[in-house]
Image (cartoon, rainbow, N blue to C red; front, side, top):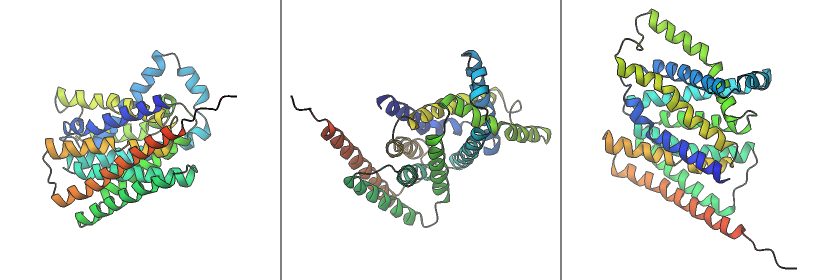
Length: 296
């Protein structure tokens, strides 16, 4: 359990600081960034399989029709999530993306209860309800449907559910899902190149380096997340995800100085209070579960 928690914390920390990375690619269209993100991630993962001598085993155990169906869904969901997220960050909507990932734990908890029959303790419903109220408050404060936040929450929540029930290891699963969407990504990048819109090789060495680096910054936290999702309950995965949007929020406000009103602060404060209650309740429950067996 502890290893799974540390994998989740590490993944969410890396995701939390990724807006800084994507901002370095603001001159490149989001679609091209995602095309490179998919392509370089797949290449990076294949290299890992080759170096570790697991390519043959991957071919025999992973490449089945059943696995293709599962990981095709995962690949499509994560591609949608990436595209919306990168576009939103470079369109100066980092704070709204953080709202999406504040909503996402609620989606993860709901999916865990509905599909995986994970149960919440009675007191856990209090922070869930409080967090929901905070999200609703923020939605009304925006004065419009926060479609970026909702789309990010739903796409990543469903992706987490698929990964929770997927049969392959994190490395094999990531290789499979990026491999499935690799050819469409390559086709799009080829089209951009032939139409004179390609960024790679035409925008300077710094952009080239950052585009190639998308493979590493993508694969590492996703591998950590996949490992965590298979080791700990989806409800706990949902709670830990608050790490990422908190960092994103701070980056949006403090580094890129996106507007943030006092009324928005109230809504975010409600959500943060819910998280603290959830953590405290979980800590108390774990302490209560440690029972010393009576001596014979």
